Amino acid sequence: MPTAVDVRTILSTVFNFFKTRANQVCAATCDGLVLRMHYRWTFCVLLGGFLTVWYSWYHREVITCVSHFNADTQVRLDYVNICLSYPYVENDSSRRYILFYRWIAWSFFILAQVYYIPRKVSKNFDNARCKKLLEDLAANAHRYDQAEQELVERAARYIIFNLNTHNGLYWKYLSVNVLALFVDIFAMHYFDFILQGRFIQYGFKSYPFIRDPQRFTDYMSQTFPPFVSCEISREHQLVNRRIEKLGCHLTIMELYEKVFLILWVWMIFLTFVTCCYIIFLILMWVPYVRVYLLRTAKPAHASSKVGMVIHAVAKNCKIGDIYLLYRLKGHLSHARFYELMTRLSDPRLFNAQTRQDPPKVIPDGKDKITNNQMDNLRNRHPNMPKDPPVNLEYLHQILENPETMQKHPQHPAQRTPMV
Image 1 (tube, rainbow, N blue to C red):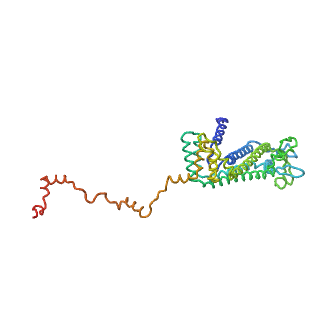
Image 2 (cartoon, one colour):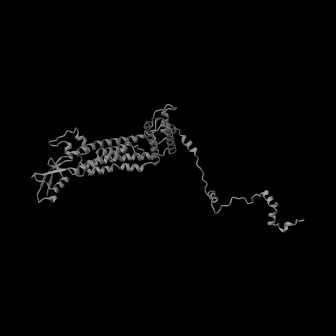
């Protein structure tokens, strides 16, 4: 027997998945909240719209048609298939064909892929070392022991050695946000093209959302008409030299008008937020804005004024360094960030840091080859002296032993002493 599906378990799993993804700390250097609103939030909204519409198409009746000549006669399925693609409404003796009714779901799917493009670009623009530094700070941001001091030391060492080299990181991040804005504009015009020029002004003209359920003259009903006409003529090659007129009810139009209203509000808000954030990134060139971004609370143990320290840091750093410090500020406490600012405020810190570890000179040429030759087995000599020392005590013992002298007689020249 088939087991029952626990809907609560499924919903809990899906909710926990999205909750985990939402609580994940952003540590990428070319990523931020605005970009996540594009490639994560909007992507999920469009994918959810695609699944909702796709489910409605395959699990319920999407159209009901009757003939104008005989409403009791069942309409042929081939006629219904044509009416799904070419329904129309008549306005002032003119026809407007509803060509989008059948393909809305796939439009959601295509735009969901387009909204993921900024994520792919930002991944390619990431700086591996800066990303690792942000990941370490984000992973230990909740700690207040000695680990925070070590992280400050690591961040200060990295920034001092790489000072004035992060301008490319700023320009890459700015370009990704501009790309996200272009994606928003493209999506607005794409939906406007699909809905025959009725999406960009859809929310404004539908306000105050007063409906006309009798004649369907309101803007939402005109954009998504629930009742349409359909005509099968000789051009369709399905009738015998006659014209068949049908009246149809598009049952999913009520769903379309709500979904597109939510999308219109979200895209207007997303485009506005993206424009404001790009303006904020451009304003980083203003000195006053740089000082404002690096402003922090003064700790109790601080001896110098915070304003003087921040002005000195803003003077020593370029736009890319300011952007990186702004990202680091979100993962450090006020006291630790002030300590980092104090180190960066002195222009002599770089020279002092570089003098601590002087570069070692590696010999090259013949000197380097001579050292290798000493370890070569072919040229290695035994480490023994040429004239070993003589043990006199051992020599006297041998000469005084008669048995040894009998076994080894003296040389004839040594038996008779020389006169």
